Image 1 (tube, rainbow, N blue to C red):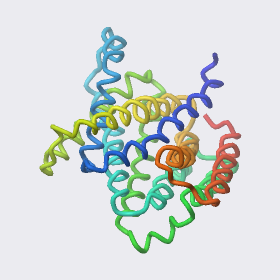
Image 2: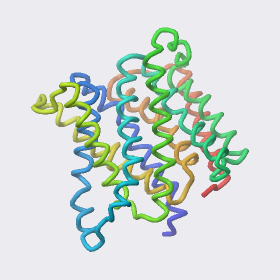
Image 3: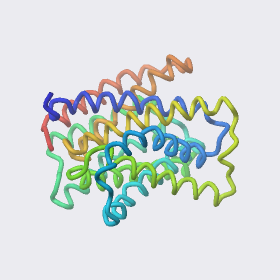
Image 4: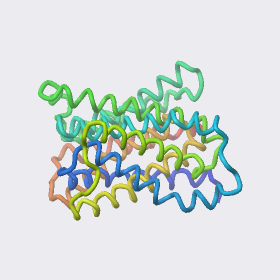
Length: 289
């Protein structure tokens, strides 16, 4: 199948996969943020490492290539650190609304650089989808900013780092296959997060036995499947289009929380979800590549 036609399917799989992240993180409340983030990347790297070694055995990296991959890896580490920590200081609603503002920053970057600049249709879709995320989050995302300013700032920081991660990754994905890109990036992010945790005196091992179940699921589904799908799509679509698609994550997370955690969403969630889906369809109709 033509990769361009396959892209919407890959993005849908990615959104479904990352939608589980909030559920697994909820079950890992007993662990400090750096430990959760570090193990997510460590295990994610280990899961992909065998395939990476086989694929790269005849094509070793040069130092300049490894050096430049430190940039998206650094952004990824900061994104997870800030976003997961934000959930400890503000409501899930606020964190979801603010961390999914990434398309605004990728769009503004593209407009400023006059490269991958969003079309009018894409900007309209971004605004419509962002409005919908407020409904999905229960409509209280803005009000909670007064009560939990620190958490909201952390979530915005997470969104900015996610934008940096996607923008820097776009350049490499044009000339590298997916595995050759994501494994070094995940590995470097894992190293950074491990050093950060150890530097703060946080123990990464041993952990409660049941925590490993949720960590394996967190690494295997949203990281290996979800993030790798988005990185694959960066070769076909702009960072703005990819990040716009990710706005579907709150819908999946809310439905899973309803099913698994018995958290019944308010009626505004369904209205907001409809707006998000309409915004994604509108924003991606332009076919930007």
